Length: 339
Image 1: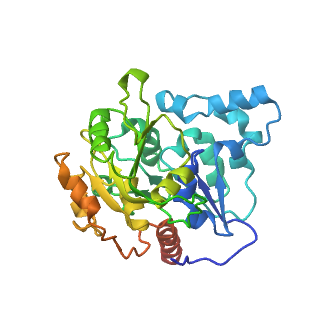
Image 2 (image 1 turned 135 degrees about the vertical axis):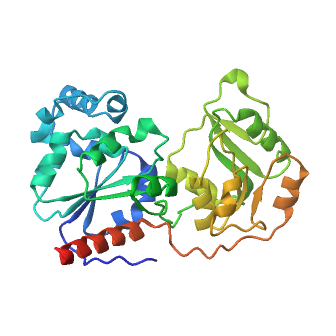
Image 3 (image 1 turned 90 degrees about the vertical axis):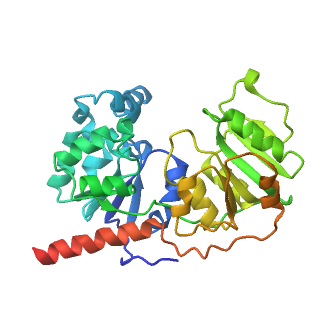
């Protein structure tokens, strides 16, 4: 367990703003579990609105999907209901992500700054994902943030941002299933990789394997006994599948680069990985005994699984958001001592 440079408190001094997703709550949970850190999301943000119609209108007005297309004006009209504008005394810092900040217009950010709250930003997406990052980058250029971080090394170099590892918290998984582990599992959307996923599932059909493939039309399905289509899961359920599996399958889309969260699951939970991601060789934990990079879907994949050597990556917690949190505190202290 990585320790944080904080003192426990009955009142939060740090707000972390995330999208409404159990995925991100789990990823950030190492710091969200701290007594002095509070999570806010759009659901919690507007709890003061009593009218259901008004709440829906407000959520639409602040919807990141809408505001990623066009940044709607006059969102400051809702300020009196806004957790942002009524934050309790003692909050020192507020951490946004590039996607969560899209629900906040400039007037809300200015009000936070007037309260002498330091505003920090974490880019979870690379700059090539312009839809996700455009608004956040505009705010950076307008000097709304004290510290700016990115998980993309190229962007850190090009834009002068602070680099941080991907944010991922290792959890203790509660698994109530009493069946034996899957040899191989996949959970994810089909997108443009369905034929490849079907081919891999077919290779492992005679093994104890499971493939949860979402976003598949009825006419696109194959009669494979180890494939379940369009079964929605929250991320806690995904982690239970990971926990029950010896090996995780990852299939990157064409043009996709870098590490995915399948990589972090593999390392944190000591699983084998079958992937077409050649970039994974750059990972500090890469070991070809445990991670198979394939170019052809053939019997080599079966041989890889039938080798029962299970990995121990000796994961040291480097992806934990506690590292990001401690770096923020360190930089704040350095700035205070400099001033």
